[in-house]
Amino acid sequence: MPKLITLKKAISEFVNDGDAVYAAGFTHLIPFAAGHEIIRQGRKNLTLARATPDLIYDQMVAAGCARKVIFSYMGNPGVGSLRIVRAAIEKGELEWEEYSHFGMITRLQAGASGLPFLPMNQTGATDLEKSNLQIKRIPDPYGGKDVIVVPALNPDVAIVHVQRADKNGNAQLWGIIGEQKEAAFAAREVILTAEEIVDESVIRSDPNRTMIPGIVVSAVCHVPFASHPSYSQGYYDRDNEFYLAWDKISESRESVRKYLDEWVYGVKDRSAYWKKLGEKTHKRLKVKARYSERINYGQY
Amino acid sequence: MPELKYSSAELMIVNAARLLKDGDVVFVGVGQPNLACNLAKRTHAPNLVMIYEAGVIGAEPERLPLSIGDPTLVSGALSVVSMYDIFANYLQRGNVDVGFMGGAQIDRYGNINATVIGGYEHPKVRLPGSGGSQEIAAWANRCYIMTPHQKRRFPEKVEFMTSAGFMGGGSDRENAGLRGGGMVGVVTDIGMMAPDKTGEMLLTALHPGKTVEEAKTNTGWDLKVAGQVKVTEPITKKELKILQEELDPTGIYLKGAA
Image (cartoon, rainbow over all chains, first blue to last red; front, side, top):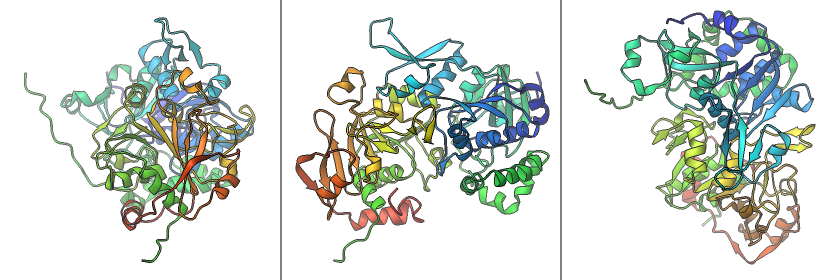
């Protein structure tokens, strides 16, 4: 069933005030375009879950979209502190729920598998367990040591950016595949943004690469460059300069407001944003091709 | 021969690199640990397998990775898997030899705080949190940390235990059922520490020109000194050249101490 719609329509249809949102992607394929669209549409009281909140949630928290964050590493990756989320937590203005990466991802895995919880081995570091009562320990029913359990995370909406998808939402991604598949299966609704919309025959030519099947997808949106300042492997590079620049921008409310006015509220959509970034930036983020060897699926 | 000039970061990176063995499977962080691993791979440990928590196995980065998920880690790697797989099949299952830790504080028993200064509910300084470190510290066979030797970084007891070293000491770690050997080496800009039988960190080595007194003054507990304190081998020209010319030519992670 074709699900190809604009990102504007997808956000307006599938993201509601108060929803739990999981914008997936570990450093790679972070769906910034969707985050910006949520800001433009003025969503409020969202619970924003991500292993690494990254700049996308820093911006959404700054814009007043969030009531709560769920995370496992709150930093500006490779740069330093994630200033806005951090300050909001330090001032008590934002609720938070925290896990280790494995705890966070195990929550999604449980959600994706339709289980109520999943176990992990003990780590000896019990302070987080004491601070977050969602983390529990139970006896191993088979007589081993107690295990740590975390509850399923089933977001209302997962947003996943991919390199290519067909119009039905069968999606292929490569490079760092973080927790995209788990987020998609765990969520009630899935919004896909894709660098390219391809014919179904392209997907069928390499079925092992399809991580997210159309049957769990609610909307597919064609949004090239949707992950800038993050990256899409093989399409464009990570904009490390912007990650560094954000460290300065996020130092004051005024400069954040100015940034949002100019780059989020002041642009209609991702294509206007990309154009506004300009030739010099486009050129800087270009990557040289490096193809994999072809494989033979066989004609049967 | 004129004496080599190097930063305290370079001193720590070189000494950390020497702790790695050929064939080790290493869980690598970006920044200085990444440089230490790549230096080891280009010197005494060509068969080192670098694993990144983003899910990359056998990375051979052609440029300096600037984040834990840098695309250069992927191109040419042996395998790329999901985060659930990297933590479950690789780390929890026991397929990782070495974990390189980071963190704001490390205490007498090698426990690490990367979460918070001040109370958890009303933090004075909110740090990034665990990321992968809680499980790496528990399940890698050996853990190392590089950190400048400063009193505030070496408290008697961490305010929040993000990752376990030897916990309260003695058989705590064993009793908790942790598979890995824990924090077996601390590399600072003054020297090196390693645990005794009880898990307490002792001063085991000094870098050339450094003194026991300096180490004691800059440690937040009454630092005990191992029976024989070694002096670390001086940095070689070759090691410095690889770091400065091949791995981090603009000095992003080589300058200064932290």
